[in-house]
Length: 152
Image (tube, rainbow, N blue to C red; front, side):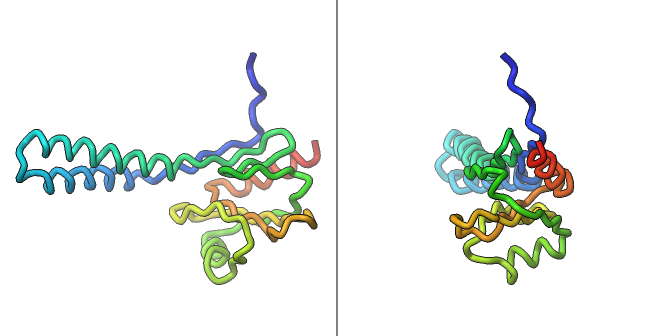
């Protein structure tokens, strides 16, 4: 049984430089363990690289999806009926909304290495969250998927 494809799905993967940093963490561990011999040094290289790579992968594995009548952003699942207007943020506005314009009550799916974002107003009167801030590489496509899913 094949599930229907989501109208929008994006995975916010970590940038390539983070994988280089993961390797450098492993090299650092290897250098720390070098005085204890070759075998501990190789273990430090493998272990340090693996731990740093797992950390980078888990941070970069968050997904944004529009499925059925819901927006799933990371751990949050929000019904489309509770969402209002969308605002595509360019890199300058993205930086502003994650710094001095940010509301502490807002839901932020923030990845600083992604230069663009989408701001979605929450219209549910029961929800104290004023808006969702979603880091995304394709904010126009996400906004269009939200509009299309709401109309369906």
